[in-house]
Image (cartoon, rainbow, N blue to C red; front, top):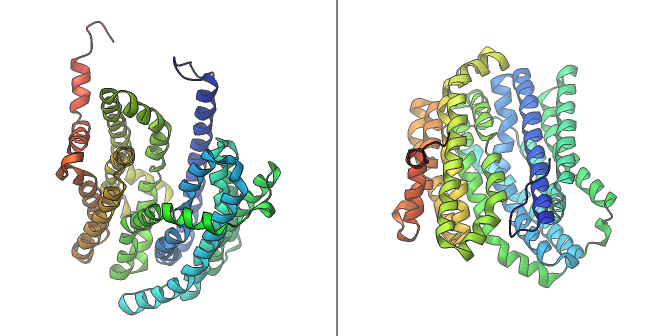
Amino acid sequence: MKIPSIPGFDQGAIEKYAKNAGWLMIARVGSMGIKIVASIAVGNYLGPEVFGVYNYPLAFITFFIAAAALGLDGFVTRELLRFPEKKNELLGTAFTLKLIGGIAVLPLIYLAYHFAVDMTTVDAPLSYIMVVGFTGVVQAFNIIDSYFQSRAQGKFIMAVQVMGNLLSAGFKLLLIVLGMSLNWFIAALLFDVIALALGYVYIYQKEGGSIFEWKFESPLARFLLKHSWPMAFSAILISIYMKIDTLMIQGYLGSAQQGIYATVAQFSEAWYFIPVAIVTAVFPAIMNAKRDDPERYQRRMQNMYDLMVWISLSIALFMTFASPLIYRILYTPDYWPAAHVLSVHIWAGVFTFLGTASGQFLIAEGYTKLSMVRTGAGAIINIVLNILWIPEYGIMGAAVATLIAYASSNFMILFIPKTRQQGIMMLKSLFLITLFEKVKNRPSGVK
């Protein structure tokens, strides 16, 4: 399909980036679908309690993996766009830093595990945690993703991610057919990351690059760390914000309830790639409007909030009514109580979509510290509410805590004068005020 021309824009550039966004979307959708199918099969095979043990290492190491990445991926993409001739230096230096980061967090994971065992109930043995913890070392190769993004070559990212997830799903299904133990499924979690890394290396080498030409430069390392640490800190806060409920359910309720809740989070969070894809596509247009026409800038922000609400409300409404049917078709009866929890948890997606959009405003205005504060506030609210509600209301308490934390975090900008207007715009979209205004102001005769 030919992309229509837009006056004032280079047609070749438009088509290039639109196709790249399309490939990235295919990668996201394909990966999501494959992961969900594999997860459903594994969950039914293992049962809620063992499935909870299986999921616990993933939730436990999330914070450390975020720290090991050092926030380098996005920043390196930007630097590759600015200085493509420094490809080998940027990739080599970033790879080395991420490799060191992955190794450095291993003793921290070891210490944190023993602390967690002393404080709460942990059914997963240390060996499971450490095996999955090595994914932080292997993920250093994922810096190649930044290279292909900088060249708008999303088709290669799509190929690697879809093939990697197909291999992962196929391996897990083979383990189910062979009747293998949980140990094999834990090893499969590390295999997933290794397969993805090998795929990136293969494509990179095939397209004319060579990891053996990468170079580490100390001055460049200091520069990257100096500028990427806010993104690393934000990634850690986001991982706490989104995964702490899983760990707290394990501590309060045990592995079986944690395994059931894992299916809820999976179905809710599966949609979160959509707002990221949208804002990635429209962010250049928003930045151009900010530079050239402040009124058009605000109008585009309002339109983006409207779009986020319409999409997220549609998903939430569908999943609310479909959740009982989804669980009865896809899961064994042990998981069926999760259906009503999903019907609540899915509404947190409305605020995730809005938060992703408003996050672009904060970036455009240079309010990166405020973005971190907002995420940190959401994490604190989530933790406090989980402490209060999980013991009394179980996994439903965790779902309601997540919903309130996400809403409170995103609308915190209402209380800050310089961002209050954006908060009001988000409220207008949320309560469909702008939709009614557009219908009301539509010229007569337009259908």
